Length: 328
Ligand code: SF4
Image (cartoon, rainbow, N blue to C red):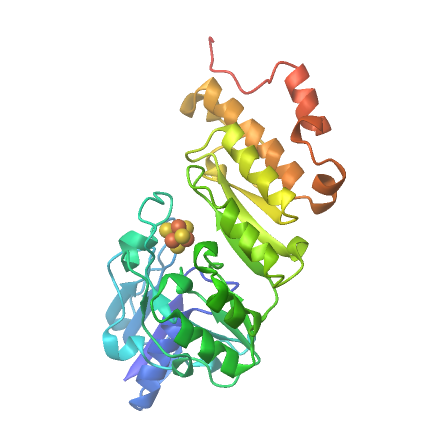
């Protein structure tokens, strides 16, 4: 068979599904290549990650199979393909191993995240490291919540055994960083440690304190994502930021739905005043200031009080201007 692969929208990262499909077909003696509109194929696989991406028109194949999270949240690779070792030769510009040891996450209240819906609300082991690691010096894990898995210690031991540098793309869940886990994580080469404190109603301070006391890494080298503009007040956002700073950790503000308010340069999107109330726009503007202040390591260190952040102070003195509805 002649197989064509279309990588619709994962341009700065290798596409894991396509790499597995490629291995599967090559093992069967099929010819596999990236799709060319001027050739003809028996089957073309189209992988689409983001909903908004435009699908190409494929007219030169007997069969076209379209999949990925950009299509729906239920499509998945057949079991025998899912467990193929990725064909890394498809993306020779990258030299790391890529995969998932677990799938799923128990934080079902995190309504901003598709994981529990897509992969289930129990973190479960889906692979051993040797399934996708072929000796590379670096491993990137796409697991959503590896530490929530009951097999966490076995999996951490596999990572220790690799001696490779490990990047936990989805971060680590601080609630599971108990003594045993900390000792194992300490033995893994991790360049960037990052965690999250998304739920303002959940007090994670004691967990972060335990993490800092374990001296796994200097706290100012540990990033903690703080979700804003979803379910928290400004006071709840600042509470999390200040508590983390007290421990020496580096909070990193994430703004939910930011792209619905401003463009990539941070300027208001045209017509935003028609879609959001004045209060919502003011709330957004405040967290945008907070993000500029907090995510700048130098700024937050020199000026640890958000109220003292000059651009924010100025905006408040001006009466907190935001775009106004016509006729308002
Ligand atoms: S902990 Fe992470 S993966 Fe789990 S639901 Fe929350 S954001 Fe999603």
